[in-house]
Image 1 (cartoon, protein in one colour):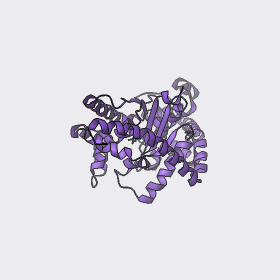
Image 2 (cartoon, helix red, strand yellow):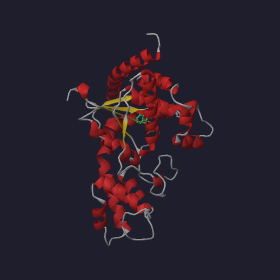
Image 3 (tube, protein in one colour):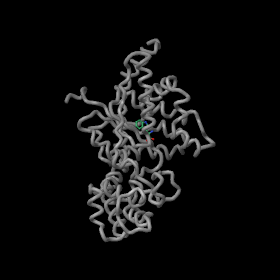
Image 4 (spheres, helix red, strand yellow):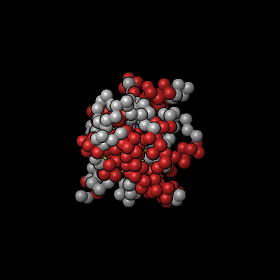
Length: 332
Ligand code: TRP
């Protein structure tokens, strides 16, 4: 297919904090499956990151790390446009414009805003509130067809669709209306310590979270300590949240079905099961970890990648922006 006929995929990851296996299985691992058939843009969203206070040196370091992680997770910069959001000024520009087409009431209903403002009560800034309009700008700038995200971003994606439709209705077709790609099978990885809550990178209990870049020892220790139940039977069931979560993780890394997993551990205890999950997870992440270590050591290569990515993205973003300016009535 000619490059220009390809459908567009866009997604973004914030350069804040370490990413967990929830981020990996729910989102990043799926990104590379689009590279052949689609024109793909994967962005490190540093403008979004500053909606909560960041230590400047840390933010800079994590921006490099997130890019390296994209590449370590299989995104070849020759086949995917990898870039940093603040390097393409149209994101901030369209973000402001879409603020004016997004309603206060809509933004007030966003559960992520409610959660984050509860957690950052001393810094409920306007950017935290309008975050979803900037995310809509990210997506709509590229005339995106498909947005692979975790289930937690579904509400923001719906808002982006609503804002795009509203704009199109006012000014005639301007933006493509994007579809989400939200994997059903691994969409929610739960805490290892409290399996009824989502695995979250802000959880103060380190044993609850497995990071993509954890060492094998750490991974094994965390799975060994994972909460199960007083039963001894490896079976997927709503009333067995700990075991079911481990089965979900095991299935994702081993490719085995729930039936196969139940048979594999029939008559065996939870100890064996937890070790097997740990092994599968550590094995699955080994290449990512090694690639990451190699990539992060070569900053100038990462800089070349982000520069080329920003130039490519800029070309696309500029086209949409000139259309938007004309439709709104800005003087050229
Ligand atoms: N809000 C997303 C998250 O926290 C990150 C993000 C920003 C994003 N812009 C995006 C995801 C555009 C997909 C598309 O995970």
